[in-house]
Image 1 (cartoon, rainbow, N blue to C red):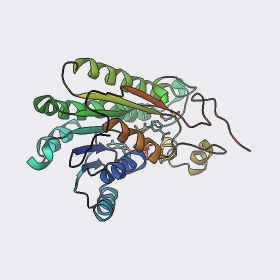
Image 2: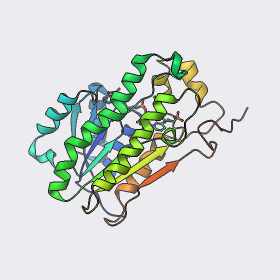
Image 3: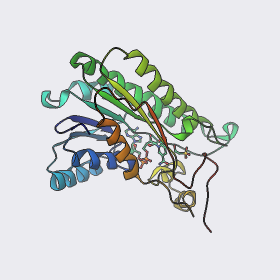
Image 4: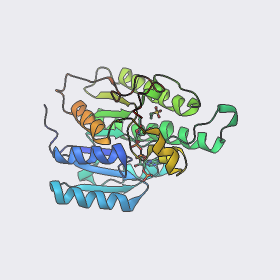
Length: 257
Ligand code: NDP
Ligand code: 8X3
């Protein structure tokens, strides 16, 4: 395991779920964290927790990844001691709705495409040139099983995660010959606020997603992301699909009564 002590790690979507779990795992490993999301109160609470528990140094950045100008400005205005980002974890993302394509809300598509694809691209475009200049860096994208297999009514969400998969592949190819690594961690069912967001705060429907199943936890994924980041420099975990044991495909799930 290679130390990431004092490395600067920018995590998008750190206010919840997998992003918050990554923040905890990387803080415990001694990294310095740039925590970003839209909900600033959540970021403040998390930063306080990490500062208290791990004596971490955190920089909070209230950021909507869909806002290209905001991404560019806020990244360009980072204080010099935070500007040299070593690890970018592109985690911010969401699904909206689970509807047949011809019946879905177009606004839901806009939100998914703007966040999962364009937001990830904006961050990557802003951060990677510095990595190339410094000849050091690692981009870790959170994809999904949905990027590998399409499921009924998953249409646009699956398309965004297939796009993430292609972007990870493309970036890896474009960075060949540099020491910069690109990894994609692609989970199946993880119990977070994901389904709550997907179903527009229909809590009962969200809970049914995980009924009778032992899903992955955000911490399970964070440990894997940390594993990717702590391999020796010549090792790149290129793409990794991780499912609960109770899940074989997006739709084949073993449920206990
Ligand atoms: P959560 O809903 O718990 O977390 C999503 C995070 O993304 C939040 O911190 C949210 O912060 C942030 N986010 C959403 N939209 C924006 C935006 N426009 N700008 C900035 N941040 C944003 O879900 P998960 O932790 O499960 O999701 C994290 C990633 O994992 C997503 O990319 C998701 O697609 C992926 N994934 C999830 C799986 C699951 O089963 N849970 C399985 C496979 C992949 P805020 O609202 O404060 O801005
Ligand atoms: C989240 C997992 O199967 O709901 O990406 O698409 S799934």
